[in-house]
Image (cartoon, rainbow, N blue to C red; front, side, top):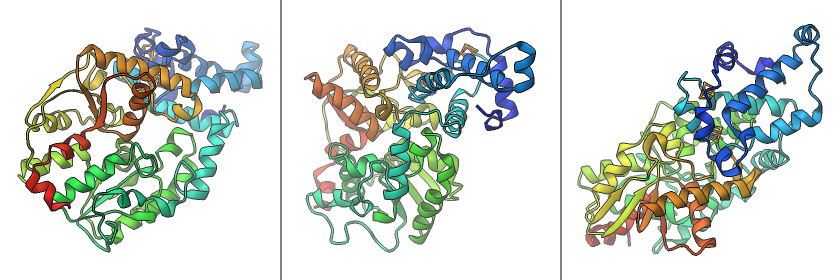
Length: 402
Ligand code: SF4
Ligand code: SF4
């Protein structure tokens, strides 16, 4: 491990940990796996131990042996079995920026060639196909053809006020494609001047961040920024909170960036999206990147309350303390069984509220929770808030999209 991967602040933060273990109690990975090695406190101790073991002079003074490859690889396995949900950071009484630390640590381990083999697949898919699944990037906008009445231009227009960034999961997973279809229908019905980027959209770079491969990111950033700027757009809308977070934190775009709930709430407030009665008891699940990441907690709730007939119930852990669905941090690729266990705990919380449906604002959360519900034949509807809005569109507005 190379200490150069960490900032001075991070080195101080490692030392500041008081071992209170609050982070371990809220870690969805450690709890679901019943394995304390996956918790933040264990990871920090391992990190300090590893850095010390590599510091030659200190090592001699303390009589420590360098880490064996087996030890380092075992440690790396635990580091990548984390959803990057940042629940640990939320509860840390010392305010240690743990998520940032996990990202630096992943980058460091990749440089040391100690990482799960799936990381190579992520690297290869993104280098070759520009999307994380290795699909043909020219097919990124094919979901438009599944709309009831797709426009001839398939929503790829030379110029528009708003660019809608679809994200890889929504573009390629049939289950998740319902989300962009719903959002495009709502925007069309509300008279929004919007465009997609089509194959000019590349992955936002979020999987690179989680895989410790940020040295590849600049090319992706430059491509996406150039594609958006070429449209002359003023605003960029995201139904994927991970794309939204990447743009907010790493793109320096100089444009208005809006998550789908923020954008839709604005349309509803402006009276452009009239909604009709939709009787349904709904629990709202805060996606980690939209909630703890971007601190967007109120807008999705306001949007749900704006739908007549919808009764919003809160989960036992909600807002800042909402538990992860299991779908973050590339965990589904690295350890699908652990991701499924975390999803099981999540759905257990939802069922305890008696809700008929769980709504969220993330394609990946929808996928993860739906997989568990379907596999276990649970009578619970899982959907994105965008789909709920589409369902509640008043007939006069939905006519506009046909
Ligand atoms: S980011 Fe989430 S999964 Fe990772 S260590 Fe922290 S609490 Fe656990
Ligand atoms: S919550 Fe913070 S101080 Fe407490 S053990 Fe975890 S990292 Fe250390």
